[in-house]
Amino acid sequence: MHFERKYQIINALNVPALTRRDRRIHFMHIAKCGGTTLRFILEGYASLNGLRSVNEARRVCGVIPELTGGDVVMGHRRTADLLTRPDTCYITVLRDPVSRLRSLVQMHMARFGRPSADLVRELRWVDANPVVHMLTGATDATGDPTADAIRALEDQVHLFGFQEKFEELMALVATMLGVGGIIDPRFQKAAPDHLLDQRHDSQFADLSQADARLFAFAQVFYESRWRTTLANNDIGKVSTEHPYMAVTVNEETETVDVSSVYLRN
Image 1 (cartoon, rainbow, N blue to C red):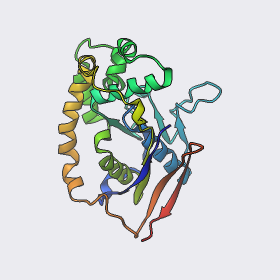
Image 2: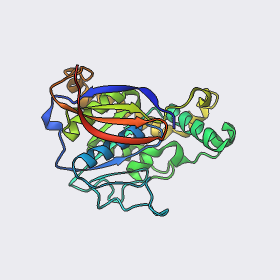
Image 3: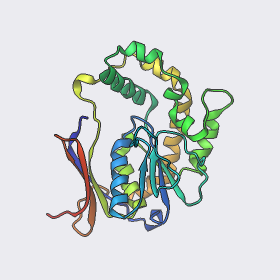
Image 4: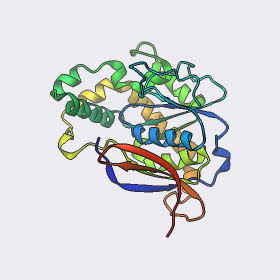
């Protein structure tokens, strides 16, 4: 795993109405959207607050854990409750579909040592449109699954942000969790020698049309929902008045430790 060494410091927004400490959290983790960073933050939040976190990626004896009983849960699969639990705050992270697919393929190239052209040919509709699939269960373009996904994003997802605006997302997440702020590194940054160029971008664009339409809507919707709130807060200003939840990384062992710390000048 490649880590970005520079840590970012993000303040929560001064908007108490956004806090959801009384709700269980379900993070819908779309691959290659910066979700590993958020995963560690949520697991740390659960640990600090005595909550039960469940992550389907942390299998026990090869068995995927059941998510319904956790207080803070996360997974790559569509939620079993279909985004309908009234006690749950659903969150996700989006990314431009073409850059997401480029990152996905380059990860598989590094992991399996296979040519990019072969990996691109094997991409399924759900691989290229995972957000629409996650929100609706659709496995192909039959009907109008993007329209259904748009309605789900509007009515059932409580918080979303973008990999491209990760600092803003962290400010929103800190506010939702009711913590003063977050200090975190970035996880799984691609090493320079594993970067894929733009040779397949036209194929990626053709494959991901459903997610691309949703992403275009989400950008406009995000601005209308959060822009005024974000514009009135200095999310990157260092404060010494409250504790930050900090994620620290041992780059040699790839272990992660989460603790509440105070920043000092």
